[in-house]
Image (cartoon, rainbow, N blue to C red):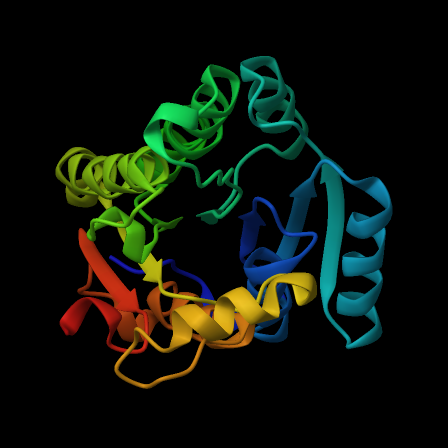
Length: 248
């Protein structure tokens, strides 16, 4: 099922929680969902950037608030869930990426990636999905990566976390979609998320069929579609938004 109540957003706005929403893809998703009339909870660890994101949304006529949260800390997830209560849409976007040859990967970086990219989404779903299922509607988007389905040098650990996230999406589909909660993975390719790394993204862009990297807003469009009623029969899918990278 789709998230309900879209026909009367002014009276009963859909609440969407977007993790890692203070920059990059997460920020673009937060802005896009707010533009669709959703009340957006912006989460992240940087209060200043969170306030900036909320101000941009409200200046454009949207509704948003910031909740500071460190999702790599299980206690941080508990505090977030207690503060925000029930939600209609969860976008698990926050993540941690470290690229390094296997023999050079630090244990601390390895653990941080699995904490942020696998454990945090798991326990966020545990915190919010049961209430969605109880009311018979809800939608969860997990932000994957082309690295979850490709062998990339230096990306063995990071790719494993994104493959695990896609696998959990399928498991949650089996567990919750019969009770009205849809789960999908969006798997971007190279995206211009950091201005200082534009040269890197340009190089990665040459590996795609379209020979360009995406802008964060293009990923946000895919998320907005998947949480909308138009995608009401899509669940358990991994949607590649990668300029054809995984097709060639």
